[in-house]
Image (cartoon, rainbow, N blue to C red):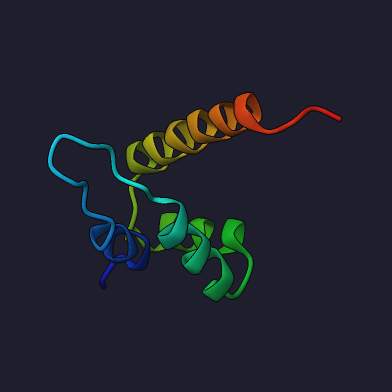
Length: 76
């Protein structure tokens, strides 16, 4: 099964010597996402489509992204 998040990110190529801008592709993916993400992850774990190690790696990346976003968002 294709990974839609990865497929969305492949389109965000970095200019030579520059950084990739994942925001547009990420926003597009989020807007098109349907369902409960936690239920979908649990389903992937239960079916064996995703291992516990893959889940742990994904969670770590998500936490890192969330921390970075909190660092740049204005505080209220």
